[in-house]
Image 1 (cartoon, rainbow, N blue to C red):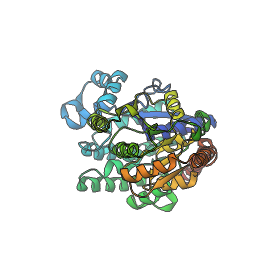
Image 2 (cartoon, rainbow, N blue to C red; image 1 turned 120 degrees about the vertical axis):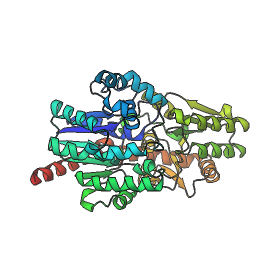
Image 3 (cartoon, one colour; image 1 turned 45 degrees about the vertical axis):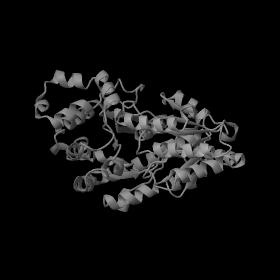
Image 4 (cartoon, one colour; image 1 turned 135 degrees about the horizontal axis):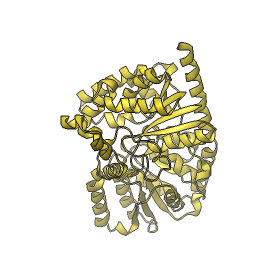
Length: 434
């Protein structure tokens, strides 16, 4: 089967859960014998990606931003577009950009959803022409509903079905002004008609997006996120030093402040003198002030020496991080549709400690590889961590459960087979309708 995955990139500046989700499925599909191809948008997917030099980056982040904001750039010569979309420029943009939040990008979000009627219509033409010229896909899989503006043109021109993953679109849309957020949700609801199947990453998010986009039941197929257990070193967590880990973008939205405050409270409790905090996941320029504030809090508490900020979080560096971590917590303020850092940590045998928000309880219950706490406050997180840190027997059991669940329920190869079944169903139905 020929499969196209269209994936927005992060440029490797921070831990991008959606990029990892798509890339892991892509690799598993290839291992199943399918001819899968990654098409990056905005920025390269990772700082080191064997695929990134073979395929152009469409909708280059710098170029489309300038064209959206300034009419002058909408008629820029091709050489200027090529320079702005060059990989050195895009890597620079990945380090500097604050494009991980919607503030200031509401108009562009709407324009992207308008597809061939938006200001990025020329970019859409380039992408579809390249796909027409270079590949003959059986199905095209887009990464999230914010890209629904691509679906109609792709579906009508390439004469193939379009599948769309659903994960954390609300994180982008909800911070907008209510009037703009409503407009975006309405546009996504309209553009959803151009998609043959939606694949939310948890049952929690299936229910949420079914209501938000008014999706019919037959267009929804829940598929949890998975990993290849063989990619991770398994060490029973009870055998490790008592280090608490955090793996995600170092930002307020992902709850780093909650974890830092909880760590300060934990260190005030007797019996935690040896406990350290290891933080990794990268950041954007937008996060620097926030990170500085967290370091100031730790310094004021006399704990800066007990915390390690780890710069490298890709590939083998992530395994080295997992080798040193006994427990992992990413207390995202509003929860998440899933959180692939959970499956990555559990594949390494690390129990997770998460607030009872979003899909976290669903994942913890299914895996048996962690604990949840009711309210996402530093006090409750500190209490949950303290209780677990003193119970090696419980840590050992959770560690065993975590690894086993990744080998079975959350194994990426099993999930890729499920995804392949979804593709086959969608392709057959599309051909019957054509």
